[in-house]
Length: 388
Image (cartoon, rainbow, N blue to C red):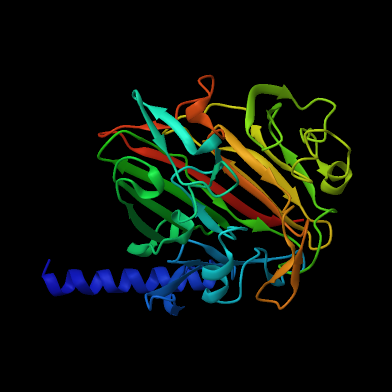
């Protein structure tokens, strides 16, 4: 058969397929990636905003500063789109104020706390910079949420729209050993799932525990307290902590405590229980020991489900990590405001931070967070949205 005739037949076949799709009413997926400049840091470095979108109108905007999830628009039960994450309205807000709340940011090198900013690795003691009294919190005062990341890749594939951000943390950064190269891959799928995959490598033994610190309010950013939201978590145990929120090493049963979310439970019902483990942090701020296996390459399992009775929005959290810090925005006191122009106050959001256990380097019974040259840290988490 002549080549021109083959090409003609191919064109006709393609046209027939498009016509067939149109007649059948089948949707053609059009996920998108849009990159825009989003202001400058005080040192004049440019910050970019990457927006991933899908056919449902769901959008997520990620900043190159701190790899921050700045906003995420998802539909409610009436199909109305609304932003469900807390954040600042501009880059100045993130640069000046985000060292405390960590709105939407990647946490690293080590999420959560290291007691006295000290740990021993392969016989050598290291001292990390402290930023919560005597302790190091979320990697120190100038950690991953304060760094400018670069766009390594972006695009659309069969799994949706994605962007891969990269950041290199030099040897000695905040006191941590080894040069750590980290990739954070954000992906928005057609089924309204936002996934985040961390991959990291090192040129010397070090410790790594990466997470994200998104503040979710399913009724909408700036809509007030989340007491009415219903939470279920698949965790039979939690980590007991001392007055500084450092784990004692005890894996405690959730039975009979405010941390028992094995069945769906209204957040406000447990938030004000006079439990000694709630008092130091004036609310929920506890690492839950997640049920199920956890190691690199494991398939994610669903670990939490959140339902908002006002908007009808539902969020499912999945991960292949062993723990998850559950936090009820206890330390927001009306000094910040968001894109909607509303002031944020205590209890206006919930944070679900999949992670390894706090203070792991100083607690031999906890899973190790050591990373050696030749190994790859490879863990992920997903946030799936739907509505009732």
